[in-house]
Image (cartoon, helix red, strand yellow):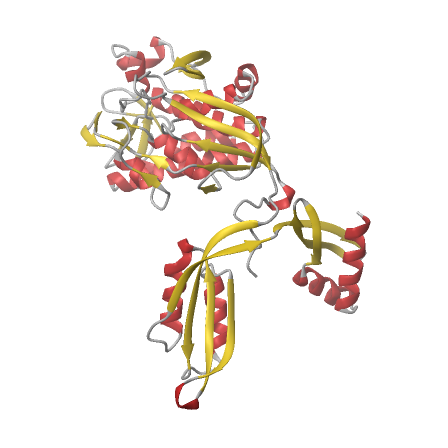
Length: 448
């Protein structure tokens, strides 16, 4: 059964949205700065991060001016003693082995071609490294909320898998410098803590600017965006041009692609707060800031979205195949599938197959049509579709819990329908008529 959703619908009645306006890119420290600017107390963030078995750093924030706009800059400070053999480098160089023209920093990754991961791993030059297994242990053994740990580990998985693919080595052979690991753990876990502090139910992000030019890396000079960033951003909306320099770091890319539920324009929001997270550098031609809008979803009168309608006529397909075809199309992401009896040339009875999909699922639907039917082509057109707002609620009945599909118009409930599968399962278990379960579920919903 396909999930009921809308472009901006939130499951379970959730409403608090964080919209990330990445007009100048995104990095880990910019995300932390944005969160503090939106109201997360730095002291609270420090208390939560203290639940990690992680030493050798401090956290500081300050208000800074970027091309006429004020924002908050959060810095992970690591003492010189913790930098070991890298103490001769500048502070920012010690934290990362990649740095771009906008002042972002990268976690310092190394991909090792041989041997097994040890904890801690030591590079031949004597520098201590951390791998994903050790980072996972640090996060999982903490007393942070489950959702914080799950989100953070998801971000690290995204980051490390991209590095492993770029360097063509197993995930367990990707390591971070000790200092880079501390920096990345604070940025990533801190970002997930901030989402909880802000009580964010859903994250939506704008398309991402890639920047342009070249960056200096430990392994040489690479084009912008960095190879790992490109890997992470596959399938996400990006655009080139804009300002020279790197605008999305691997850590920033991992955060936004893992934590964002969708990308696109800002949904209808009742904005409660606007925040700005500052990057390190202050270029003259643009504000180096990550802007965030925190607010509640403003339920529109109806939801307008773009869809693609695919149609084809068939007169030589075994009727047994149509049920299978419908299942395959829904699995491919179709919103609607229906068959209409028609008369075709030579007065043959035939079937008009109609499929409605979002644009990003067009290729999957087309593949299933050509694979599962005898058609040699189809027509399609882009169309607007208007729907009522939707959400799922749950009621308790004497037959057990039942989900209710609720349709909204201008914020008011206009229709509430008990979920068929829930009612059917409850009716079979209780040995009663399906209609009785549906009637009781509707009564309980209206009473509540």
